[in-house]
Image 1 (cartoon, helix red, strand yellow):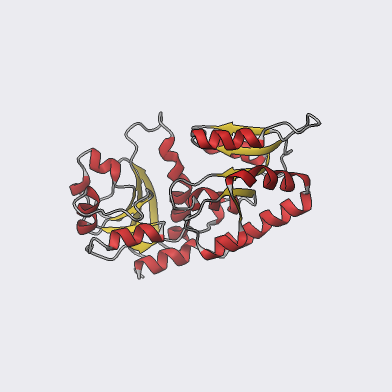
Image 2 (cartoon, helix red, strand yellow):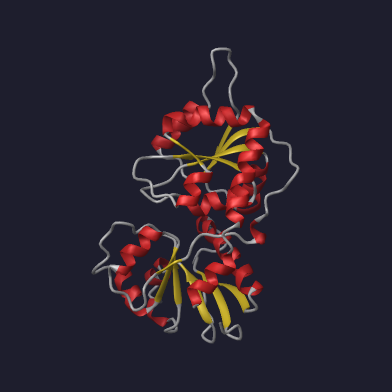
Length: 287
């Protein structure tokens, strides 16, 4: 491992800082930044430009592609994919061009299979979503006045599920439920800190490990919506509370009502994610 090599972690957001949706990548980038520094590399983060003298790890190829920049990167560039390509035929797409020209790291094993079906320049690497100490950013010791929090896109099916969670009981009591969209960083973390339980929904067949791993790293209790065919890594399946949509309310009520059970469950998730060390992921990827 050549730690004398410079590392540049690159994010592309042509509307930075006005548009925050790409901030969803921030925690992943922050974990890699910590990991490279901890391994002894000289590492920096950049927005909208790379370092021609460094090994560039670029988070997302889609925007550089749209901007006409995809062929301008050094040959040793690694593109880190955060989108969903599982079970798709990528032949003849822009993704195939990227895979033939550069190295690919991906957070999803199913995505990796789709990449490797292209016979890429180098086999795609499953960069397991992992823990770094700098992810522990959610404030501690905050009064938890929100029973259930959901942050993210509110699709019709999610709206219906959350509506059920917020419904009143026959005695006119119920859970306090907060839903927010397009909230990132410090504001999001303050809401997480105030919440007893966070609900997670996954899109498609790939579990939202990036979002949930951040909550696990901050010792929060997460109720995860489950559907048949959802691909979940075995250690996560054993440690997290996966329930069908119709069971989300009952799962939230049980955790909200039992402080000891909720805290024990959150600690279980925290202990698990800490076993996934970002330094190990980096070392395997560069070996």
